Amino acid sequence: MYFNLALLLVVLTAVSGFVWLIDHLFFFPKRRRRAQAIESLGGLDADERTARATKVMNEPVAVEYARSFFPVLLLILIFRSFIAEPFKIPSGSMMPTLLVGDFILVSKFSYGIRLPVLNTRIFATGEPKRGDVFVFRFPEDPSQDYIKRVIGLPGDEISYRNKTLFVNGEQVPNKYFGPYTGPSEPSGRNMSGAQEQVESLPNSVAAVNDKSPNPTIDHHILLMADVLSGREGSWHVPEGHYFAMGDNRDNSLDSRFWGFVPEENLVGRAFLIWMNWSGGIDFGRIGTIIK
Image (cartoon, rainbow, N blue to C red; front, top):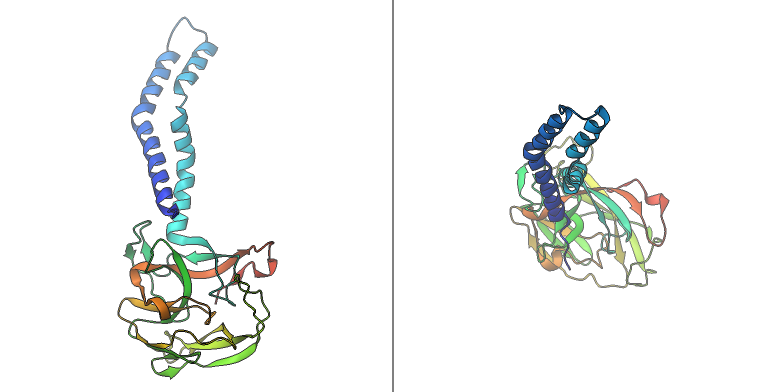
């Protein structure tokens, strides 16, 4: 069952804010006038007048809760919608970069300021760059969030043949790093033949600035020597779309299978692992910058 936390936050914030505002504008002034009238009564001692006035000024329970929770809910909504949102990695498609059990933070302003729930961009702050690890709403089911790596930008020609990636007709260099020694996939697949390689994607910034000190974006990928390369082919990335692939190339359901990521489906750029829990805390992964 799909649970829309963003919608729930918006509703709770709006309701609590509305209840507090209506009370502040209409009912609080009435309570204050009644309390002032009690304070001015004769025939009562000071303690009795104070007790009665305090009782009159007491907020209804609903208003008390609304006033207490509204600022907290508003801060959470602003932080989650416009600054950073936490996600948990549920699959091994981004191994070895991200492991099952990693809790990550995703920058919500890297690709534009968007309205919560509607996901409509209201301010442009940047665009995905080749090599970014990004979160997006799965085009075939927008209720699901996917995380992959940006491989192709609008206008790019992407090809994948025999476990080799080509961008705009140029083979993307990769070099053997060593046998994979990390955790196994959640499926329990035998990882004895897994190879970790360093892939060097062409830097989209360097393409327009020849003086860029980093002409490539280097990151680690995972290849299984005894597994076929899977879906092969060539794809032209249309305007307003992106081509996404998982770093675990032989076990990733990505743009090779279901197509392109529309700009309106973007959620944000993954930048930090803040926790890892997979039967216990892996302190070595806490604070890892995602590259």
